[in-house]
View 1 (cartoon, rainbow, N blue to C red):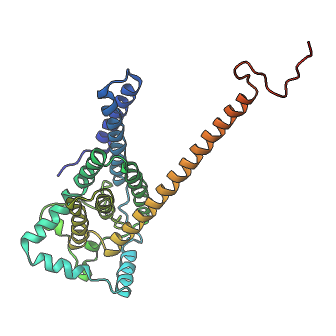
View 2 (view 1 turned 90 degrees about the horizontal axis):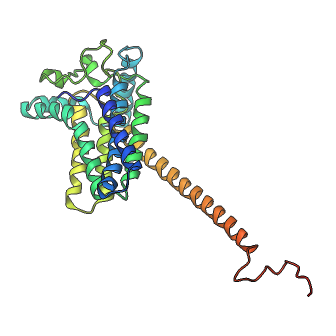
View 3 (view 1 turned 90 degrees about the vertical axis):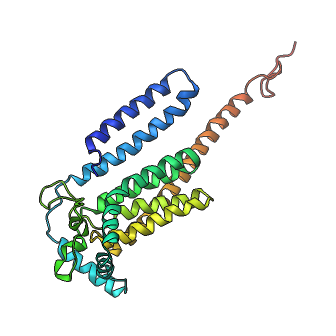
Length: 295
């Protein structure tokens, strides 16, 4: 599936931001009250997508140190007694329909999942939307920064038996290594799991409907397919979950500090007004400290 490029997303973000600015400065209307904030949120999401796509175009295709770190991850996972990705991959490959489904799910469900979640959260649970939107932005920034420490995915460790399931089924989501347009060695952490975790835990926190469990099913499915297809290690997903928790805490602390600062500014402003009132005459009476001349 061909997704919009970073430049297309940037143009869409700029146009949407301009629309939001025009509506904000125009005469207040019912349509403007709804469309203005929606356009601004679309600009934010489109900008986030643009940055993600642009980061994927950085020339991080050199294998220096990436393979060694992958073997280190294998050693850590064995020490932690985590299940083998290879066992899962071999099981999937024994079932053609399951392997094909895994390849398609990895390639297609990533972006639509987070977009649908954000639209639903904005429309139905706007009170908690800013918290999860901010956490998503912080989480994505963490993942894009950490990707500069190159780590090879399982599919590069062919000596251990791993293969690229996506390529086998003609769904190459990364392209050839060395082209400078792919994230061949950005396995740690998994942005697929990071975004799926936002969907899963955000839905559980915001809604009480039985349908909220669809988000958790999406997370579990994503965790399975990233390993089954040979694109990520289990630890890639585990680290992404930890980063989500950190991102939520950062936003919580930041919003709490912002509220406290606003309250302090309001209190200081109202206190200044109260002090000014003390010296003002009330109902024709002068303040007690003003000296009256005898007549």
